Image (cartoon, rainbow, N blue to C red; front, side, top):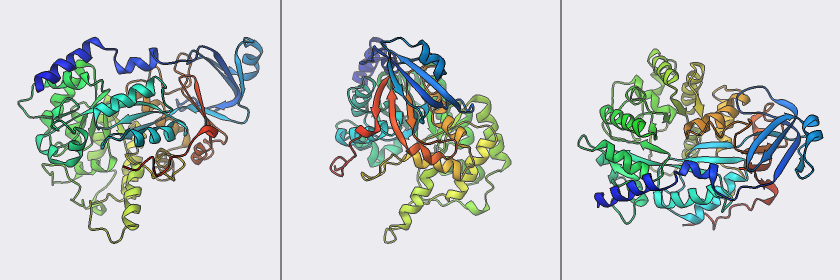
Length: 456
């Protein structure tokens, strides 16, 4: 069976257009030009907002950004004019931690993706699921066949014992979890060049290094992935590989800020689990050991996918379910916020992932809760958070040359809101239109998710 997958992977890797190229070259890109005028521009770089600006979009790309009066006077008469006076334009947002196909359900996934795009989110990074479903969603989204953000997904690698977990079984149904290219069991005997080739053959953008692997194996994966040109995305604690070992391996992104606390403890569990409650009240979130870790991350450009709001969400969910049996140990939200704040102070780049799906009645995805928590609890400014959700998100998936900022030559992924998000990050919820690759998705056209959409 493995030989079969190797053959398929080589065909995909060598004979197919890479997924990363589809959004740049494929799809039904608009051939006409549109000039958006009169708005204030927040370009995503962290620079101050610029009022009275215009953006000219042609063939799905940004071709000019400048003062409205000058650009409106020079516009070609065939160019469509959109009066955006009173609006605020910023790059399309990116959620760097979603799960669209842990248990594959295309109806659910498409409904959730619809909520993303009409909320200003133009790209998402999926952190492991059934590649067969994810590849279909990625193709649909890149070609704009359905209203959805572009989807970039991962191929998972973990120790053999992890695949006893029922989740990978659901994501590999019909095959054996741990023995398929999108979910591989790794041992010291694994031919790593072959394993990474298999992962690349799924058209994954990155390899997720998940659980039950020692530091030596994390380093082997990261090293070979770098040789073959594919991103590595890891949990901050891989069990038994510690945060220091994971960062030292040279991975591109680490997820879940609270697991950095394992760098401060003597106990290092050999396998992934949630059941151990660390003595958070005795740990210093500004410990010198974390300062050294953050210095390493800053030096090599490792991005922190903090998922900060997740901890508040888990705590609230437990409060609302008092009859529930004792569940996973939850990191205190204030401790997670201090860890994130200190990382930011030390120059670590942060991206905005959620790892949470909100119920059908929610008008916006959880990403907005993450952005608001980063401001309210971790002390980032709205401009810093917007940069984290745009330029840094593009860096996570390796698309910073083409996405993430409102600059000439980049793809026209634009979010328009009616209220000033620099004054209050909550104003990002006032979205009036999303533009993805030049195609407009007015919020007024949004069809809300129903409970039937999310039913299994």
